[in-house]
Image (tube, rainbow, N blue to C red; front, side):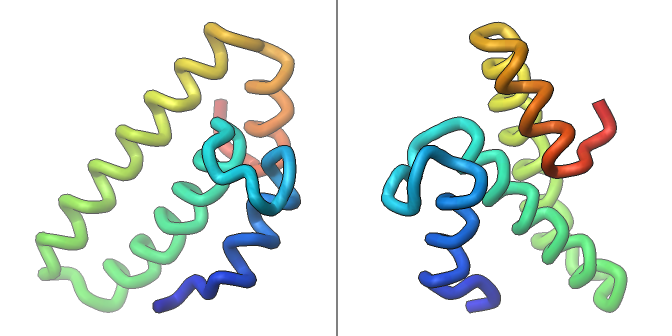
Length: 89
């Protein structure tokens, strides 16, 4: 797989509350962002891979839902994760 166990733990340690905290919204948003970037690169090479395209659209929707939840729950955490990951909003 493109993302090893160690890379995931490092991602959760950087963006979440710790390397074992995989359930925090920030950690999940960071993981989804990593997967979205990977799928985007894949689709640039394989334009007709419609199943991956569908997966990408679903991932973007999941990330958007988590960002909306975080914005309603705690606006400061939302702004921090958006700035940290370089998302548009």
